[in-house]
Image (cartoon, rainbow, N blue to C red; front, side, top):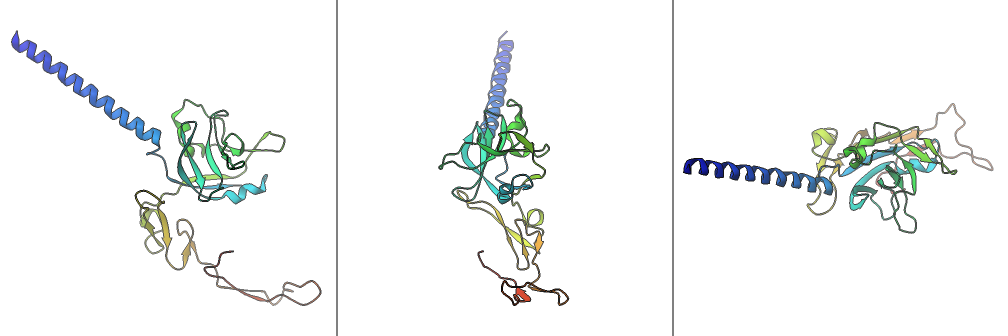
Length: 232
C-alpha cells in the first residue's frame, strides 16, 4: 500500500511539473508574441502613385515602434513626422496614415489593407496583408483599389543573405538598445540591400538631338556629371 501511495504521489508531482512547464512556456511565447519579438523589425514598403501621387513618396523603410495600436506593433518612417503603418481596430485593417497635429490615428488613413478577421492570428502581422491588394481613401471617402503595393521584411542578418553578397556590402548590426541593422554598401553599389550598381558617372546629350534650349535663346550644357555625397 505504501509503495502504491508513493507511486501515486510521484505521478501527481510529475503531472504538476509538466503542467507548470507547459503553461510557463505558453506564457513566455504569448508574452513574446504580444511584444512583437517574432515580428520583422524593418519593412521595405512601396506604394503605387497612379491614383494618389503622394503615395509614391512613402516608398522606403519603416521601423517597428514600441507604440502599439489595437494591441499590435506599429511601424514608422525614420523621421519625426514620418508616415505610420499601424492597425486600425475600428476598421480592422492595417493602414498607412500621417499625423494630424502630431496626433497619430491609424483610422484616418490614406491607404489600407483589406478588412481582416480581428480574431485571426494573421491580423497581428502586417506582412500577412501582402498577398491581397490594398485600397486607397478617395476624396469622396470611398475605397478604390491600389494598383501597385509591395512589402517585404528588410532585416539585415548577414552579408551573404541580405546585402547582395560580401562583394557588394556588409551587414552592420544595431546596438543592443537602439538603432537598426543595415547594409553598408561597398563603393560601386547602393540601395537598401546594395542591390544596385552605381550609374554612369557622366551623361552627354546626343549630338543629333537639339539638346536643352534655354528660354530667350541659347542652350544648356550638353554634358552632365554625377554628384557624389550630395544631399539633394
